[in-house]
Each structure stands twice: as structure tokens, then as C-alpha cells.
Length: 143
Length: 206
Image (tube, rainbow over all chains, first blue to last red):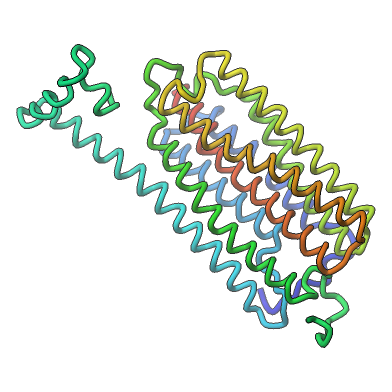
């Protein structure tokens, strides 16, 4: 990445942009094909299409948004920019995966003990207001 | 202000004033906050995606054709927006405005197809109140659409300023910041494309 100030490169043909554009189209179509045109298992499909999504996001940041570019002679600004975006991506991944994991794990546990006597208490609670359609309001889950 | 500074003649205009530099850096930090904002909407959507109550399943209504049209319009607009900044750095005001107008046109096209799609979903019995899953969908995708709408107005204003005042350190920093915003919307769309549409269709079809 060296000490590249925001200069040069911007004369002549915009190869960087063109390459970024072509790659993003290729990745988009490939992801679509993986998702709908193959018989891979769900896990593999998810891993591949999300891998492509992050790759494409990186392409945008590098090819179009010039995230590594510095406004001063020192490369402090690019380090702040990259560090900030990586941190934001980390926060985003924790929020999304954390939420999905916590909620999914919670429901699995709930389902498992659904018929155990211990949850009786729960069900009574649910049917208290709802009458015949107990459960649906309180838990919102039928899985 | 910036009078005493000396510059490499290659330094782009938008980085020549202290304010321009700080605004651009500040905007990067704002984008970090936007990533966090969208991540909460993605989390909500992904947690609720199977809670369809009596409404249709998400993947049931998604259509590849409409999805691809929207995706290519937005991808291309991100590319033309990059070309606009490229032209700006060659001090070509006409090129900048031309490519930005193309970008706006593609953005409007994207909005048109997105609204058509929303209307189609509502017609098929899936509105924001149908189920938790559809609420999550409309809030997430709608927030992105609202950002695009705002971006169209913002870019238009900045272009008017460029047309009036020409390229100065101030106006070029504004153009550069709007370009970051526009590319960012494309990044968000990539994840909507993957996490909402592709996942929705995969889950539904098998």
C-alpha cells in the first residue's frame, strides 16, 4: 500500500473503475448461479454467496471509494479510514451473527423443552389472554 | 486558512483545504455509523425471516428478473459515479456533470423498479403489516431506498453548486463526499441482494 497520496492514477483511462465494475457484475451473476442453479447444500451456498458479497464490498471500497488513499503525505488518514471501516464491519458482523445465533439458539432450546412439564407454566401464561389461539402471540414461533 | 500550505501539483482539489480533508475523513467515520445502523436492520430481518404468520413466504414473491434489473442499475450507477470523480480529478467539469447525471438517471431507474416491486408485493398480499418477516423486509429495503432517494436530491444540489461555482476545493470535496455516499449505497445493496433476495429464494426453493 506504500505511501500513496491521492494523486496520479487519475489521468488517462479509468482502468481501475472498469475492472471493479466487470468484477462486480461477474460476482453478482456467479452468486446468483450458485444460489439458484446448483445443487450445493444450503450451508455451502450461504458460505459462497456471503464470501462473494464481502469480496464485492471490498472491491467497491478499493476500486471506487479509494479507501486506501491519503489526503496528506503521512498515511495517517488512510489508516484511520481503513481502521474505522474494518471496525464498523466487525460491529456489523457481531450484531448480525450474534442476533441470529442468540435467537435461533433460544428457540431451539425452547422447542426441545416444549413438551416437558416444566414449560406448562409457560403455556398457561400464554393461553391466559388468547383463549384458543394460545402460544402464537407470546412466542410467535412455530418451528 | 489553507493559504500557507504547499501542495504537490497532483493533489486532487478536494484534499487541498483543511476543511475538505476533515470533512472527507469525517464522512468516512459517518459511513462507519451507517454500517452499524444497517447491521441492526439486517439482524432484525434475519431473525424474523421465517415469521411469516399467515402471509406469503418471502422467497415466494421474489423475482429474479426484477432483482437483476435493480442490481444492475445500481451497480452501473456506482461505476458511473466513479467515472464522474475520475473526470473531476482531471478537472473536467463537463465530464463530471455528465457522468453524475447518468448516475442520477440510473438511481431514478433503480427507485422506479424498487417501487414497482413493492407495489407488486403489496398487490400479492404482503405489506409492511402482514407479518414480522415482511415488516423486517420493508424496513430494511425501504431504508436503503430512502437513502437512495435522499442521495438523488443531495447529488442534484451539489451538481447545481458545481455548475454555478465551478470546481473549487470546497465544491470538489462535496462531490467526493456524495460519491462516497453513493458507492456506500451500492455496498449495502450487495448485502441486501445476498442476505435478503438470494437467501430468501434459496430457502424457499430448496
